[in-house]
Image (cartoon, rainbow, N blue to C red):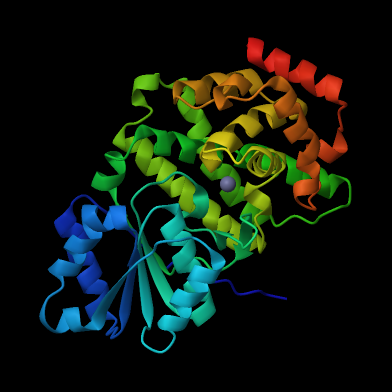
Length: 352
Ligand SMILES: [Zn+2]
């Protein structure tokens, strides 16, 4: 049987505002799109979205509406979808993770096409078929949505965003190396089947980034690096769409991050927690955990338990609870550890 998946048909890198405005205008006009909704947040609206909106003039402006996203709650996203149910045909999401997640959710709900203009690249959600929204109990939930039809990448904005976001994107992308090891492990144990196309895409993207450890750290935030990071994050999204799940890009390290979210409700970024989880997973997989820790540390990522303002016992609890976060076979289930063993591993990781 041959399955058909939707893939983004459009990936354009622009270097300045004029390039971005002209590209958006070209897409709307060349596709004769009449009813467009720009979804953004207040901060990004001041920075760029209002300029985009102002740039649209005459007939073009009549086709475009703008909505400021004020909450990533499911209920608020449902309200936005209901409000625009009959008056939009196309969404352009301009902003960071939450804005993109809300836009993806609404686009899926209304069954319409959407483009994204990510202003930061802190995780692989820029093109994944998953939205992480907040439910009524204040929990973050992952919902299956769809990948964007196109991405316009404003390189000037991303290159000037705080380095912390680029570092977090690195953490989320590099985790593919370990989630893929988990996937292969599950296949060996007869608990899953592989999609080699998806696995290869996820692997190449992450491996290309890990190869940068051979280069001096001064290169890590260069435009060449950022370009390759974005490419990798886009391909990660595609690999999830191909697999029909987050399996290629989410294994034990993501379970640990989800447990940290649940137990501590930290303010740390997803990619920062996943980077730490990757070091622990690399240790269990016996795969270059020392090199990985050093590489991630050069990006300024938190690589020790104390960097999260947690005690070793806190982290032991998160790792103990991690397997229950999702029904997915990983190294955590293959190689369960007692609290004492986990603490010993963490101590060894801290001392490196
Ligand atoms: Zn992730």
